[in-house]
Length: 132
Image 1 (spheres, rainbow, N blue to C red):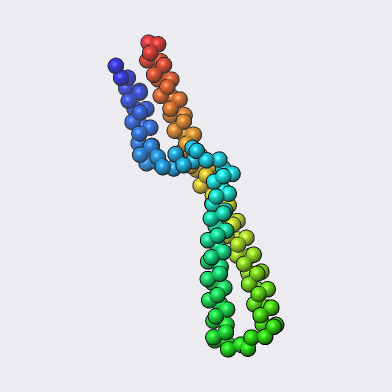
Image 2: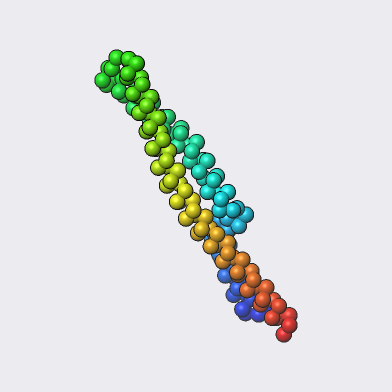
């Protein structure tokens, strides 16, 4: 016979799983280091592509609007400025991604731990009912 406590516990677990099931499964299988590293790698490549697009647009606008003659000094300044800008842009993007990833992982891990505790409570309820 099903006890009322077990039914309530199973219903609560099912509602949590329907709402946050994908998140629980994803963070239940990953280490924090792996998740943060993956997000950092994705940000590195996407940030590089975005910066290249922005840099190309800015350099094109400089040449079109100002009609600058291309000299060695102009080229050197554009390359140096581009590299420094890239490093600053990428550092900021990676820093933001790191903090967001850590926060997301901790929230997902809390959900996975909550589900694990619910399973333990359900197991205890089954043991209590079998011993009774």
